[in-house]
Every structure is written in structure tokens, then in C-alpha cells.
Image (cartoon, rainbow, N blue to C red; front, side):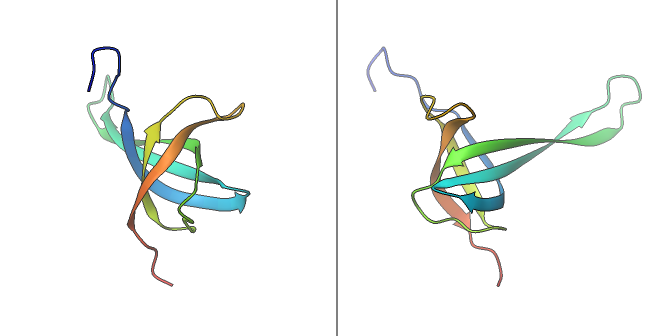
Length: 86
């Protein structure tokens, strides 16, 4: 890796929609601690990702940041970690 290239940030999440052409919606869940109470709470983020691998709903996928591909899409599916049970 040369000096001017960065390592792409990767995230893991579950596909919740694949109804678009070559695009999937991925739900990223994380656990954070509440600032005042200290209780662990769940936070989630939905991201659109370019899908050339054919991921289906329920699959766990790894996505990486890339250049903006559309107005809302700036991630790419790198691999399908686990397939959903049919």
C-alpha cells in the first residue's frame, strides 16, 4: 500500500432489502453505553451498498467504503459472510 492510499473502512451488517437493482440496504447494529445511566443500548444505521455478489434478505455481509456511486450509495459489498437460512 502506497502513502497516498487509505485502507477502506469495513463494516458488517444484515441485508434488510434487496428490491433495488444492484443495491442492497444493510442494517448496521452497534451497542453503546448511555451517557448518564450507563445502560447498554442498541443503535442502528441503515446504509445503501452496491451489490455485485447477489446478496439476499437476511444475509450477513461485509461492506467497505468507496467513492460516491449515487446520492445515497457510498459503500460496496465486499463479501457475504453468512447466507440466510431459507
